[in-house]
Image 1 (cartoon, helix red, strand yellow):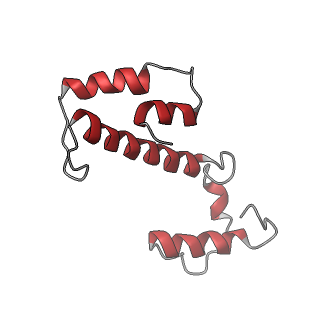
Image 2 (spheres, rainbow, N blue to C red):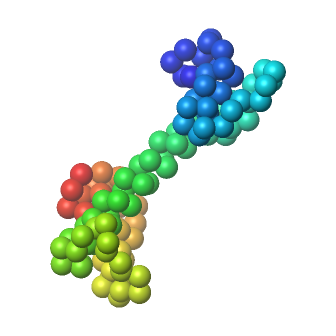
Image 3 (cartoon, helix red, strand yellow):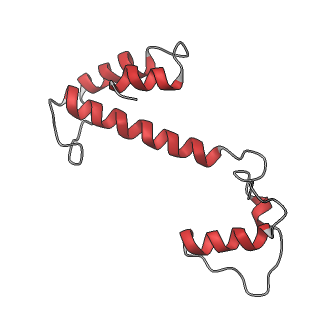
Length: 113
């Protein structure tokens, strides 16, 4: 969309919706449906932020399984109500506040980039 904004963006939008969401475009409709999505039009990095958040959460989960749960399998690790996990989050994730860049926070929290 951003690389070739002169193309038929509505067609591209519905092609992507059909491919990834498996939702069929309405028959006979040709309106700028893509433009109704804040994620695309006025805040185009929303989807990137969702992915970055998911990656960070996964890295933190693996770090907790490794360091707090002593090498537990991340696929089966359960830590709800575990005060050691809360301490980890306070110290390694929330404690630095805005003093670290995103990459530095990731390194601080997980030991990895």
